[in-house]
Image 1 (cartoon, rainbow, N blue to C red):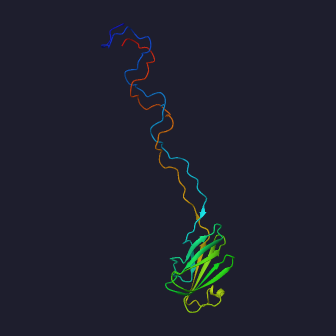
Image 2 (cartoon, rainbow, N blue to C red):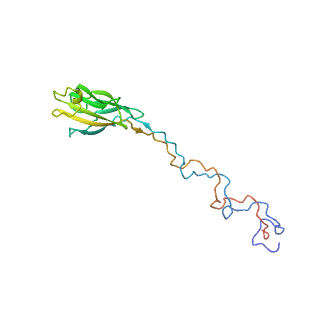
Image 3 (cartoon, rainbow, N blue to C red):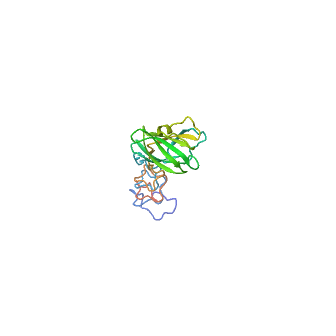
Length: 234
C-alpha cells in the first residue's frame, strides 16, 4: 500500500482495487431509490367508484289518499279522514276506481248523492240510501287530462229532490244539506329508487406500480456491486 491506514483493517490488501467490488455495500443507501416500485401498493384507493346504475322507467302507483279536497258548503269540514279512497288507476290515466266511505258525519245519513263522470264520459248522479258510518261504496270514473271531479251531496233531513238531476245540485233550501267537492287523480307517478356508486374507498391495493420513487432510504445493503473502483486500500 502507498501509506498506512487510519485504523486496523480486517485483512491486508494488495493494493487499490482495479474494478468494482464483488459484494454488496455494508450499509443502507443514503437516498431514496431512483425509480418506481415494481409491484402494487398496499393501500386502498382514495375515491368512490364512478358508475351509478341506470334508473328504471317510471310506473304508475296508486295512492289511496291521493284525492284532494277542493271546497264544501260546510266551512268547518276538514276532510280528515278523506271520504274518497282510490283503489285503481289505469296505466294511461283515463280512468280511476275509488270507494266512497261515509266518514263525513257521525251516524247514518238519510240520503247521499254522488256526482261523477262515468266511463262513457257522461255526468252520473247515484243515490245512496240510509248510509251508515264507515259504509263503503265502489265507483269507476273516467278522467280528463289525468284527473276527475267527484261531488258528494248530503241530505240529513227527511226530504230531498225526487229527480236525480236535481238531487246532484245545490238546492234553494240548504237546510239539512251539505255538498263536498273532491278532485281525484287518475295517474300517480312512482319511481323506484336506484342504487348509487360507492361512497368509500376500495378495500384492496391498486393494480399497478407507484408513479414515483420511494420516500426514504432502503432498509438494507444494496443488492449489487459498486459502480466503480475504490480510490485506495480499505
